[in-house]
Length: 147
Image (tube, rainbow, N blue to C red; front, side, top):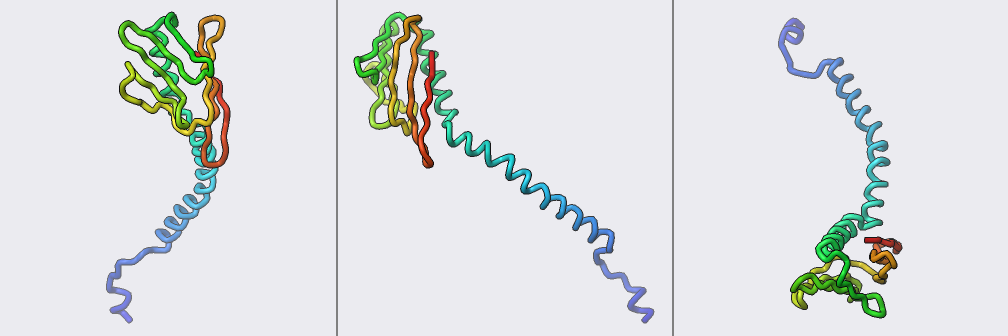
């Protein structure tokens, strides 16, 4: 019996087991709270496509500031918007469920995808309003952006 108690075996003590059990229980109790806080932001970012709309708004605002809202043309259906900036013609067009930017009738830059309907409206105070209807996997939403 003396040999069993005198030899040193590396093993966990009861305190270490309790400590690791405490840490695991703490982590498992925090997981539902973490899940509840992450899921709404994920749904919100997917639903609004906010990043795409913000980049589109930035690009459109930049074109309007260069143009000073003077040479602005919108076709009758409200699907094509043209800016005449010095020697460049910048054109925003709703086509094939996308909003596409074209510079001097060359190159197509897709700015927004998954667009059901888009209409450009020129307001009286020389501001521009864009009515968007976009869709995502679960449904669709409408948004109005004013420049």
